[in-house]
Amino acid sequence: MTINKQQILDAYNWRAATKEYDPNKRVSREDMDFILETARLSPSSFGLEPWKFLVIERGVNPDLWNTLSETCWGLTQKLPGCSHVVIALSRRAADLHADSAYIDHLLRNVKKLPEDVLTTYRGFFANYAQNQANLLESDRAYEDWASKQTYIALGNMLTAAALIGVDSTPVEGIDYANIDKVLADKGLYDPEHFKVSVMAAFGYRAQDPMFPKSRQAAADVIEWVK
Image (cartoon, rainbow, N blue to C red; front, top):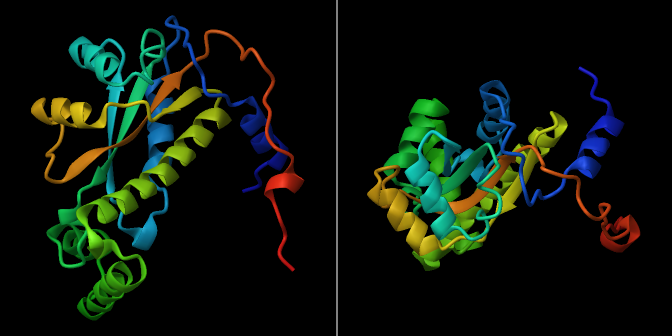
């Protein structure tokens, strides 16, 4: 399959962090499924997929939509018109130790590794966590590491959306402690296993950006090492 490189760059140049969305337009389920599939297929460190994605559609759960407005100031301007919000959850520390039930399930039932390979894989990750990444220092170290993985999926979703003409906005303007409690209290996830990492809004821009896209020159941010 040949992909036109210029079309990809055109999508990157077209994409903008949309401030206001058109409430009269809605992203189709087919397009959202495509965007979410790029998140599911995203790479993660050691292939451990330490994430889950909650998808909230405008009009389906007004109470939850209002809760997002109250607890996520980065979404307030977007929610009146955006079509969907995707909440990326990252795994808690208890699920990320090499001998955890989650990692055992992933290696056995998802990756279907033979027992000898599974043991080697688990040992390699345990060594990395303890001696290279220093994840055993604290639960926060494990959870920050897991949260970083969700940003790989986030980037892929934003790019995939742009490629099919869907606007998006990554959102970190979140009262994390509050939204974690609210969503867990609503039974949307078990706070022993997940926490909110980052969000993104999707929809169609209400108007074009006020200013043309600007980035530093390639020569200022890219250096070929000799």
